[in-house]
Image (cartoon, rainbow, N blue to C red; front, top):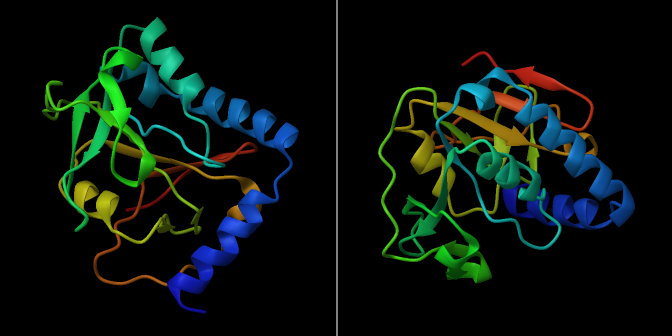
Length: 187
């Protein structure tokens, strides 16, 4: 199967996770991330605004607000995979953007890398080597190429894969977190 077919199959599989289980999984994954030394030591947390049946980032966002961490959300600049992260201090700083995803408003402060930053990276699946399959535009691979912090990918256990097809543009994530485990990847 090519990536397009794999994406379609994974979306269907994810959609079939019962809602009550998904709520439990999201909380368990979030707790694993929040309890990690990476999160505890991070001053800046780059996080996506969840949509549809994606991993729900609300617990992580809440923990950031409670811990006085600066929260940055991606802003898609164009349809060619270019994005930047902007600080959004409250839900009022977000509005529906490209692809129907909530993004920071243009007046928000742009992200500048600091030591110990983490980015929560969305996926449909990851494999044991840390490669992920996303939605096919390459936004996060382009960003991760120059990111010096720790990339954390929440993935439902049911969607983990032994091996995903990759190309030269794919960038590994450092940590994979499921509802049952946390795995550091050798980069």
